[in-house]
Image (cartoon, rainbow, N blue to C red; front, top):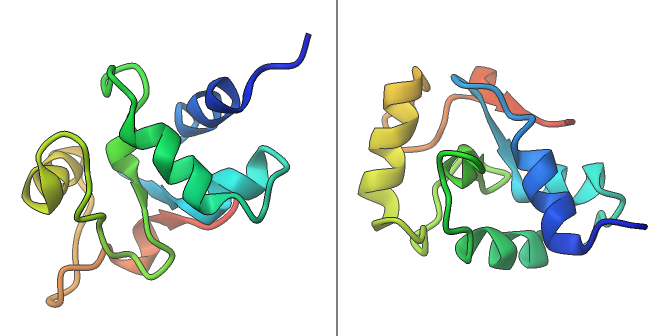
Length: 103
């Protein structure tokens, strides 16, 4: 039986290691739905277990954080990423060396 879309998204996000992030588009491409980055974001917004599915490790393609982060917005997401060891540029974007472009 095929996994549903949400399960596919969650399994992909679980592959992002501590200290790294990936993008909505990379997650979408990994699960075979390269044009579904917004749908990926929607599924992650409803994630109720960020320890099991680290949705905070998914960012926009330019490295910026989502203002709609479900667990407290940009400030909380950034703090969680910094606790993982992720570094940011002066304008608040994740530094490129921390972004996994292909899962």
